[in-house]
Image (tube, one colour):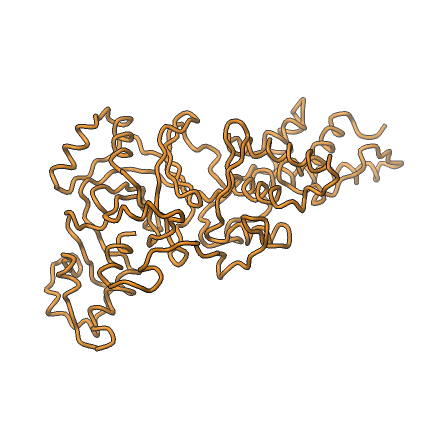
Length: 433
């Protein structure tokens, strides 16, 4: 008698895959009206449909490519459903097409982009255009793909740092209750994309110089630069103390020309010149990335704020600290200000760790479905567009060659980032990120 109504609903759902940011042509489906003449032919049709269902389940939940294929910046891994589970649950489902739809991401932003995509595709078809080649359609599809790599549950209360938007948000029960400007990593030190849990907030933090800055900035200065004369003034100028295997050492007694600088720890104490400012938000991760204050607030006046050494600088971080500690401990504004005023290094642990999601979304949709787009500062859209559509995509709908691991340089940069300025400028502007 041919396929049942349930099976035909599955075929129809898979044929509508384009509306979900997938590609319907990627699925090998038997004709819904097929009437196989033999048992073998019927089995072949059922096997073909079963394989299409499994492929749809994998792509709906995990995307059409792995994050690692796109960029080393994407430290994410999709959560897939076991194929046996898919076959069992879809067989038991009274509405198998609805079951397939349920495998799509549940995040509200994903659903808003889905609705925007459906509306845009219908409009383009009505005007006789091909949706697949439209740059706005492609950008929506690219961002829907990245939502598939996000954790299935973001949390009822979490911090959302969206790199291309240069913003940090605190989300509570699906609503944005805090939004602030941030500075993110410049192209050379691009901020990675990952999720972690904030476990503490440091008031008046110490700063430990990271390895890249030891090698690229401190080591040349200590060895004397072009003149080759050892010079430890950079340490004195920025109050950097030195230790080796946990024990303080006299920097004047170290032969920096031969020493392995990575074996030494350089620490800047709390104070008005500390490059982390007065607050540091710790969410332990393998990338050594954190959010923090800054002593260069002028960077927040830049339109394109890809200016740091990788970490995320937050404008008016005391507001964020007050919000987080108010939620976690019931602290008041005055309690936060009093602890800051001591000038002492204090670590305040959070009783309930807060999820922090560093993302790379160049298209977001508001509650009315209106789209807001952001520049592809690291060229990740361009790389994904090449893989998905065969052509790299740029924000204005044109094309751009992805640089290296994928990246288009920011439009504006601070003076030190263009090769100007002194080492002191570099330390204050670049260190601590």
